[in-house]
Length: 173
Image (tube, rainbow, N blue to C red; front, side, top):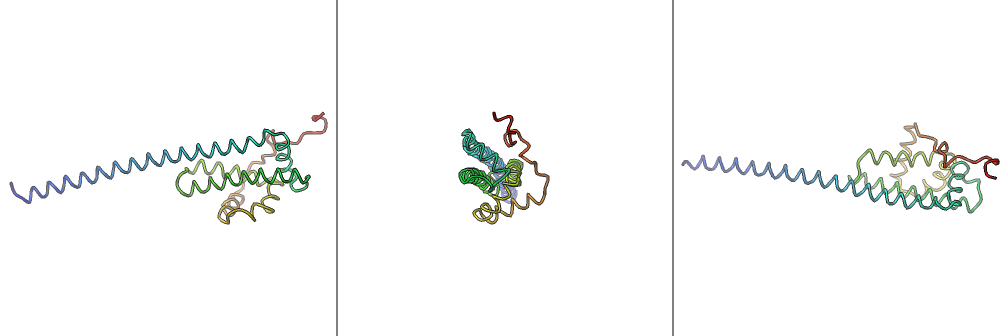
């Protein structure tokens, strides 16, 4: 057998082995990315559920609802509750943004949280809080991302949702 033929066959087998290894590694990376994204979604969901638990206290829920309508023109206590709860929402979104930018979260999930946070901060009270607190406290990059979403427009007025609607004086008695 000619050594040139043996060498050529060896190179072909080696190249096939390298290609098979690369295919295997790409499948592993894809599967790992999917698992990482699923874990990120789970963590975000758990964090969001924790922030929602604050709304089970009716004083908190009332302050949060009223804050979207009339922050900062509320009692001091209600201002604190609203501001703290919206800060929790902002911190949740900041984590979502970090996970998205590190590739641990897919775009459609990220876009949903970005839009929801932009809706929260586009109400009259949310906008006042954003100017008062959000733009002062949060990372400049996060601020620019949120403001770019404001500029796109088409945000839903969450005050139309049942939990954000004001009750008339007749229905509270």
